[in-house]
Length: 193
Ligand code: AMP
Image (cartoon, rainbow, N blue to C red; front, side, top):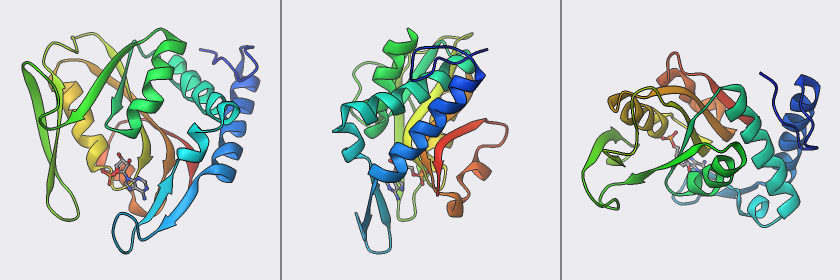
């Protein structure tokens, strides 16, 4: 399936050009913040990308191309920065938007998955009636690090009987080998570092 490029034309060449443009934008604008939120972590701050409408469009176009190529009917944003990316992709591709949130934020009946962090544990939730069997779901987040968050999100989608068709992130931290926690799941990273 062809992807829509940043120029609005379709075709593999334009899709490749769109991915390259997104990589260039992320390389130049994402800010490295040492020792945040705790010592030893090099935090990838995407806010300069969000604050630049041209750069943000380039990145959203690339993510939308990935969603189209995967045949996604639904996109899930993982709290909180995943929301900022999944919402425009859902509109651009006319996919359903389903938020995956941290524990205790969603009203009504929810399904939950708990996973290990470096220190402690975290829980993600989705509303029980948000996903249905047969949906093709693309997970979206800003950074893939150890893969624990993505694995929990994928588990929630599978628990609901929907199909996880892939994970799209702006940045993959290769040294943390997050893909290893996502066997069989296609991961598209606009920038690998
Ligand atoms: P993980 O579960 O280890 O893959 O961590 C992924 C989640 O934590 C994503 O939702 C990211 O927003 C956040 N995260 C982890 N590491 C970083 C980092 N170095 N910079 C920015 N966000 C990060």
